[in-house]
Image (tube, rainbow, N blue to C red; front, side, top):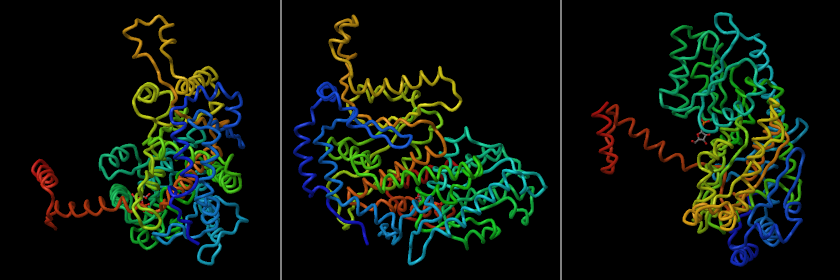
Amino acid sequence: MALPSVNPTKTPSWKKLEHHFNEVKYLKMKDLFAQDSERANKFTTTWDDFYLDFSKNRITDDTFKYLLELAEDVKLKEAIESQFSGEKINQTEGRAVLHTALRAPESATVIVDGENVIPEVYKVRRKIESFTNEIVNGERKGYTGKPFTHVVNIGIGGSDLGPAMVVDALQYYKNHLTTYFVSNVDGDHVNEVIKKLDPETTLFVIVSKTFTTQETISNANTLKSWFLESGNEEDIAKHFVAVSTNLDAVSNFGIDSNNIFPMWDWVGGRFSLWSAVGLSISLAVGYDNYASLLEGAHKMDKHFQNETFESNIPVVLGLISIWYNNFFNAESEAIIAYSQYLYQFATYLQQGIMESNGKSVDRNGNSVDYQTGTLIWGEPGTNSQHAFFQLIHQGTKLIPADFIGFVKSLHGNQDHQDKLTSNFLAQTEALLNGKTKAQVLAEGTKESIVPFKIFEGNKPTNTIFIQKLSPESLGKLIAMYEHKIFVQGVIWNIFSYDQFGVELGKQLASKILKEFSGEEKNKHDSSTSNLLTYYKENL
Ligand code: F6P
C-alpha cells in the first residue's frame, strides 16, 4: 500500500488554519500566558525521561486543534502504519523504509517481499557484538600481533555523520579506542588523519551502502596504499572491514568475506546509524551501549506509533514546525543543544532533515505550490549565545528554535550545570517576553539609545528537557527527529526517502574530472570554462 497522497492545502483543516492565521498572527505569546495560567501545563507533554514544553509557541487552543485535524486530514496514522509494517513507501526507489526494524526486538516480525527481516537484522547485530568484543578486548590483533588502538571510519553523508555525531555525543561512555572519521575527498583530510596513525594498530572501517561513492572509495584506496607501505596484501584482511549492500564491490576491494557487515536497501543512508553503519559507534562505546542507543530509539518508535497525536512528541513538533513554515513563512529552524557533547547534532540533522524534505514535487508528480523542507542550523549553547543569538533576538527574521537540555551533567560539576541550565532557561524566557521600552527606560538608558535596547520578544521555542545524556536518551532524541521528518513529509505530500537532488552535481564533477586528465572535452557556460582554465593554468 502506498502512502496516502493528499494535497495538504486542499484539506478543510488547512483552510481553517489559513483563516485562523489571519486572526492570530499578531498575538503576543506573553499575553496568552497572562490570560491562561494553565497554558504551560496544557502545552507540555512528558514521556519517560523526556519533558517537552511547547507552550512558548505562537499557538492558541484553536491552532493546536486545527493542526491536529490536519494530521487526520492527511491520514498520518495510516502513513505511520504503512512505514512500520514494511510497505514500500519509498515509491520512487521501490523500497521499504525500515530503520525502525533495525531497533525492533528480536521477537518482532517485519515482512519485506514476503520475508521476515528481523532474523537477518539480529544475525548482523550478533556479528557486530562479537567483532566489537574481540577488538575492544584485544583478542583480535593487527598484522604484527599488537591489539588495535585506533579505528578509522571511512564514509560520507549518512555513512559518516550519524556515527561521527554519536561517537562524539557519547564520548563520556567511550573506551580506550581512539576513533577518527575520514569523509571529505579533500586529500588534506585523510592526510591529517594519517599523521596520527600507526598501521600496526589501526582498524579501518569502510562504510558505504553503495560502495561506489567517490569520496569513500578514494579515501579507502589512499588509506590502503598507505597501509601497504608497511603491511602486505594478506594483512589487509586483518585491518580492513566494510559495511555495505554491495558485497561484490567490497570483495573486489580485497576485503575478506568474513569482514563484511551487510546492510539492506530498505535502510536509507541518513537513517542508517542503527545498522552496521553504526559499527564504529559499537567499537567506540562498546556493544552494550550501542544496544542501549537502539533500545532508546525503539522506545521512541513505540511512542510515535501508539501515542495519541496530541501528546505524541514527534507529531506535535512536526505540526508546530508546519505552522511556522507554511503560515508564518519562517524559512529556517535552529537546533540549540545545551550540551557540548551534541556539538555535531545540528550538522547531523541537516542531512536527515534537508536531504529528506528538500523536495518540490508532490507524491503525484506535480510541482508543489507551498513551502516544504525547512533550513536547519544550530550550535550548542552557551557558545551560540555569543555567536548568532543577536540575530534571533533582534533581527528581522522569525527563527523558531528547539532548545534541548539535560537536567543532570555527566561529570557532576553542579556549579557549571547550574550556570548552563540558567542560560538554557533564560534564553527561551527572553525570546518569549522580550524587553519593552518602559523596561529599557527604567534601567536609566539614555533616550537616544532606547530603541536599540528594545527586544520585541514573541520568538517561538520548544524546550526539550531530558534527564541525562545517555546512549538510551540519545537514541530517543535522534528517533524523535527522524519521526518529525516523516510527519512533515507526509503532510507536505512529498517523498522523503529518495535524494535525487544530490546526483546532478556528482555527474558533472565526474565529467569535469575527465577533462582534467584530457579524457573528455565538454562545453560549459563561460563562467565554468574560465574557472576550469584558471585551475589548470595555476596548478
Ligand atoms: O550524497 C548522497 C548520499 O547518497 C547520501 O544519501 C548517503 O548517505 C551518502 O551519499 C553516502 O552514500 P554511501 O553510503 O552509498 O557511500
